[in-house]
Length: 414
Image (cartoon, rainbow, N blue to C red):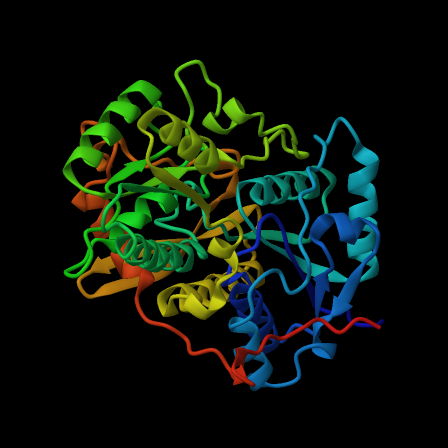
């Protein structure tokens, strides 16, 4: 009787980060070390998998050098998706199709690298496997620049995005200072964050010995009062010619509307019911310009926040690799329906370790910035917030440069 092959499959889902491929590298390297025969990669996550789009990763990764290059490559190497699996009772056929493909490929473990919505996928698939008696193991690997996954101290991708935001904020401030000799200048930075303001708060790290940092920071956890905002900015403009403000794209008014909706934005809605948010900085810049009569500018960091691998944090890359490997180890030891987390072991010196929790406690739960990590006025973060983020942006991995530009590992399709 033929021995059943031990194969593993891994996918990437949701908005990518600059270190998501380091987790993929951790999955691949650990799976090979633990004796799995084949490591398949889903092309465009569970959505591509349903169309039987996958690749044998041994045809893409040929050496330790490729592993190192993959760790330095931004975006989703395998391609991502935003696909919401239906509830099991709503469409059992789609689950039958998924498990038929898994059986055909002799998959022992299914690893999904993603954020909150991706953990929902792991939860549903592991539940179905238990109900129907399937033996496959399902493990989630955390990934999101938003840092809003429950139970993990922080998420891979956040540290590098925070580093990029802090560095870019410093550079924008320097640029604005050079143009503020004889007239007031207001710059508004729009930073990603629908409901959680972790990234926007990271702009405070720009406050260093040689830089004052942003003057105001507004997170989506705090209701945005546009009248109080105008009054505060007016006070600042009377004191200094150059004002820089960081706002989350998801800041909301008391009536629940996103600020970006005031300019007609947020029309598009994805499969998970999330409105596409854009235009917050542009709206507020126009509003302040009209009210105060001074030069204003709105800047969206946009996808640069999650794709700037040349600014990636070494801590972030190493931890992303760690949690990828830990997911394979957990699956190999019989765990299923769980997500790997990062536990902070020590602050000084900073140390972390991989842990694991039931995905049912994580999926569809958001971790928000604690209220006591925001000042009383609701327009800046506290030292506790800064102390939490600072270790996560440390160190760097030098890119492999070719002709003056970073080199990336690119998927080779047949």
